[in-house]
Amino acid sequence: MSSTSAITNLQSQITNERTVFMKNLGILLSGRGSNFDAIARNVQAGKIPAKIAVVISNKEDAAGLATAKGMGLETRFIPSQGKEREAFDREVVSVLKDFQVDVVCLAGFMRILSPYFVRAFPGRILNIHPALLPAFPGTDVQKQALDYGVKFTGCTVHIVDEGVDSGPIVCQAVVPVLDEDTPESLSARILKEEHRIYSEAVCLLIEDKVRLQGRRLVSSGIAL
Ligand code: GRF
Image (cartoon, rainbow, N blue to C red; front, side):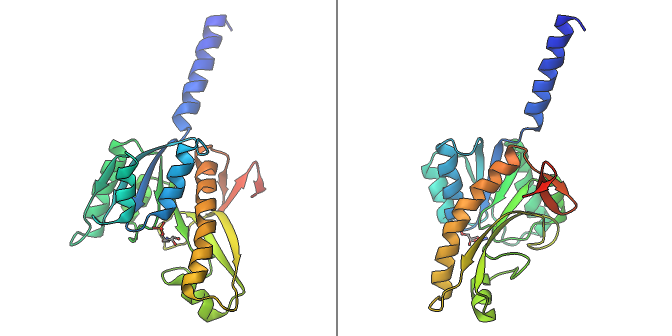
C-alpha cells in the first residue's frame, strides 16, 4: 500500500469512528429536572465527553426547563396536551434530529414513548427509574417498595424499548430501606444514587464501550 492510500485509509477509519461516536445529548423532562442538572454539571466539568444539544419539555413551567435556560442551553417547550401520542412524538423527534442528537436522556419525562419515537433512536434512548427493575415498574415506586416490605431498593438506568420500564439495563445502584423510611425519605436517598449512575450510564453509551448480547449489556464479552 502506498503511503498516500495508507493515510487515506487511516483518515476514513478516524472519520468512521467519529461518525459512530455518539456525543450530542438531547434531554427530555417534565418537571424538577434534578437528573438533568446532574448530567449538565458533569458535562460542564468535562466528566461526560458530550454536549447537551437541546433540552425539551412538554411542560412550560417545568423547573428543569428554567434551569436549562439559565445554563444558556438550547431549550424547546413542545406542548403535549390534546395531541395524539405519535403526533407529539413526531414533533419531538424532528427537533432532536434538527439538533443532530445521538443519545436521548429521559430525565423525569412523564410520557410513554410511541414505537415511532423508539424506532427513531434504536438503542439510544436512556431512562432513569427509581427502583431496581424489573421490580416495581410504573409510578409511585418508592411507596410500592415500602408497601411490599423490601429491604433493598434502588435505581436503574435502562435503554428504552417499546415496553414500559422494560428495556436492557445499563446501570443500577442499591439503596437500603430503613425502618423509619417514608416514601419521601427513601426517594431522597435513591435520588442521590440516580444523580451518580445516570452520568455513568451516559458515558458507557457515548464512549461506545458496551454492546448488547441478547438483552444483556456487556463490555468486551463480560457482563458489567
Ligand atoms: C426521578 O426519580 C426519576 O427516577 C423518575 O422521575 C424522577 C425525576 O426527577 N423517572 P428529576 O426531575 O430528575 O428531579
